[in-house]
Amino acid sequence: MDSLKHAYLILAHTEFEVLQKLVHCLDDKRNDIYIHFDQKVLHLPKLVTQHARLHILYARVNVHWGDVSVVAAEYRLFEAAAAQQSYAYYHLLSGVDLPLKSQEEIHAFFAAHQGQEFIGFQKGNCDKEIDLKVRRIHLYPNRFRAGKGIAAYWYRAARALSLRLQRLFGVYRNQDVIFKKGTQWVSVTDAFVRYLLPQKSAVLAMYQQTFCSDEIFIQTLCWNSHFRLKLHHTNSEYHDCQRMIGWHQGELTEWTSADFDRLMASGLLFARKFSARDMNLVKRIVKQVCDTEISNSI
Image (cartoon, rainbow, N blue to C red; front, top):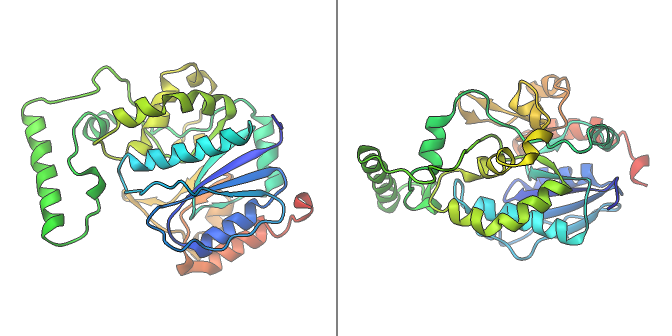
């Protein structure tokens, strides 16, 4: 294992102008970059690196929000990277993320904390949410965002009726599993990835017809293993995983230029989510974080 090498695993489906900036920021000789594009993306963007090895996954998953297909896509990324070599850290990002620190700072941070797992866990009691998401059966899980129309109305009505009946008759599943949840975006060691991979079939089977299992499966595997003792633990879910995520009243919102100072003062390593609707913010972060440190990539 190259003790300096990191693998960046990116789930992408839109906002390719932001993705290009993200790849630019990760273009360092100490990194390999792996990108999974949703199978629904017909025309892949042109991405070029000068220093990092770039791997575009061509065995792609048809990803549906909230469905176990998100987990399947994440497994494709972990598998592709682990098949190449052992990395010091594997960073799972979305295509609308950006680093808030330079690669020199990021590598130094993880070298100082080598062996710790950076997995965010939701603080407080989330039993009701877990019961709803993974202890009930969700009909039409690949239609959580079915849009409008008669078919979409039918999907939602059937799912709601099914959940109501399950509550009425006390129908539960996976009762013997201690579930935990948090953000899906993590930075984990090679040892944890090698623990994760052999459990793929069992994981995909258990989380069929669940809701947002991508926020649960990694936390649950970690918590029920010896890796629980290796967690980077703080009093903040987002410090635990080193991600600045823009939640506002339960909705994931995009960062804007007004948030620049807040983002840069957070002390965290990564942030999501960004959009081409405010490329001024994206370019400002890239200029400060990435373009001021070219020498380490040469």
